[in-house]
Image (cartoon, rainbow, N blue to C red; front, side, top):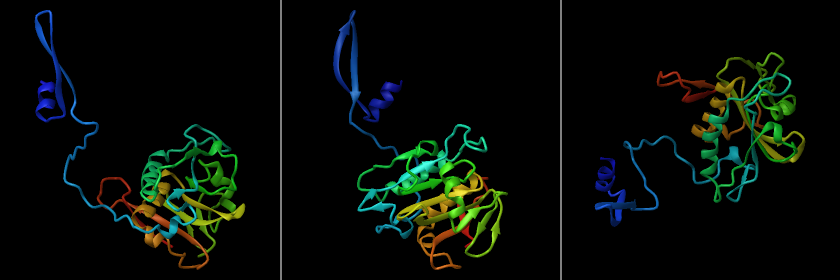
Length: 238
């Protein structure tokens, strides 16, 4: 049944026929090296810019990713014995970043594997699940306090909520010649909100904070616009 269906769809084709014990057997092979299936009509989701967005300057250079993506380990680790659930969101982030690369050279490593904190980095996740974010936290213009609330030194405001995230492209606090892109949240929902803000609102996210023209640094709040229980858009709070 399935062979006939695949043959009718021209996905496979007969290559040779032989007789085995008086029974004719037909060998099939794929009719092409690759196939593309469109399940339904495509919907336009976002417009990928031709020029590199400001939020990715110093992270990508001449079509090459010059930074490593650092995600928290999925194994319980660190002072808080927590583990990261951000790997799903990292996939979305990698696909977006990859759209600006001439060569797909994306390197993702766990926070427990980072030996050099002074290099260009893309840090994913909050300080409870990402040890590199924990080391940088107190040196950031928007940071997490001891109660894990998000505090903006730029606006003087404090934010709470699992769907609150921060995103910034700043000088590496440990060496100014390099950059760090931080996509972080109080929980994995907040981190996902930050990544969605980058993907869907890269132009606005690439602007300076409205309370300070010194930093590209923002606070966002994730929203569920289509009532399915999943964060699909954000509001930029500052």
